[in-house]
Image (spheres, one colour):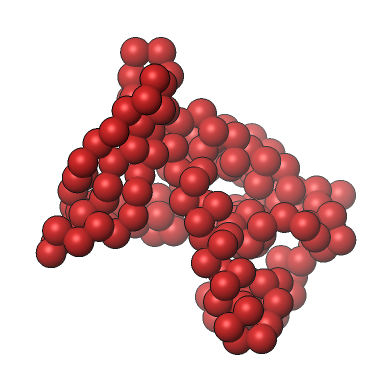
Length: 164
């Protein structure tokens, strides 16, 4: 059963295409969440895998690789839920009942699906703020995250598309 909204798979599909074909210049202007996703895809998947995997398989692969941590969900619960037509949101509460974040949902057919795209936008905003506080560019921060995870040599190779 698919629990993620179609928009989440759309994000992964776009990132997959960028990972396969986009040069550094073509990545300019994309938000940090997209950049990180592209670089991680380039590091963790082969070009053949990215070419053949569905967006659903990419998400599953990210979970299998530990890039998305399902255990985190066991430590939170949903608080007050509000719905407006085909959209809903709920507060995500931590162990101390403190609101950690808002989680958005979209009704697709008869089911409610989790929409993570607002979290990606929030990540872009937070990384932008962090970069400004450190007097750095967002790109420099993204590059540092990638270097920290994969090392300088691998990080440099991730600037190139997987297929030509």
